[in-house]
Length: 304
Image (cartoon, rainbow, N blue to C red; front, top):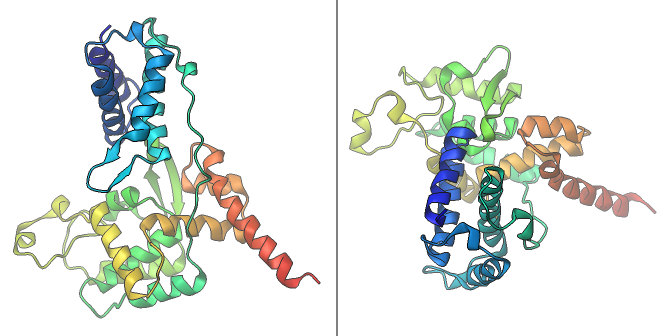
C-alpha cells in the first residue's frame, strides 16, 4: 500500500470509524502530510524502517518555523510522531504489513509548566471589565463563567442560551472526544450571566454573542453572531492587559486556575478530573505539582 493511500484510509477511519473531532482529524492530516512530503507519497508502507523514522526525526528537529527563526519545539515533534504511530497501529490492526508502531520512541519533553492566576490577579481582571461600557456585561459574565466552570474556550463558544439552566446552576457540555459531562456554576457567575442576558434585546441562539461595531455585523443573525474562540481569547487577553497582569493570560489560564483552586481547597483529584473532562487522570495530575509547591511554601513559612 502506498503511503498516500494509507494516510487517506487512516484519516477516513478517524473521522467515520472513530468519530473524532474535525480538529483532531485536521491535526492528524497536518502531521502526516509532513511525513508524506518527507518520505514520498508513492512510498510503500511495507518498506518503512527504523532508519526512515530516525531520519524523519532528524528532519523534524531541523525544520524551521517560517518567519520565526526557530525550529519545531520538542512537543511539536512529539505530536508528529504520535500521529505517525497512530497510523501505523491502524495499518497493523488491518493486517497491512508495515513498521511496528512500538518501534517509534517518543522524545522526552520537559515537564509541562502551568500558569495560574492569584486571587489578587483574578480580582483585578474582574474589576477591569466595566459593566457600564459596551460589551462590559458580556465580558464580565464570560470571565466569571470561565473561572467558575473551567470550560475550554471551544466549549464555552459552542454554548447556546437554552443549554444553561439558570435555576439549577448546571448544564451538560460535550468536550474532547465527544465526552459528555455535567458542569456546575457558582452563584456569582449566575448573577453576572443573568444581568448580561437580561440586558440583551435579541433572540439570537448563542449564549455569548458578538456585538462588533463593524457595519457587516448589523446584517448578521442567530448563529452568525456566535462569539468564536479567537474572539474570546482576545477578550481575555485585553482584560488581563487592562488589569496590569504581566503574564500571558488565556481562557486556558482560567481553566488551570479553576482546577488549582479546587485542589488547594481540598477537592480530590478524581472529582477534578471529572469536572475538567479529562480522559486520563495523568492529565489532571499536572495540577498536583502546583498544589504541592504551595504546601511546601506554607510549610517553610509557618514551620519553625
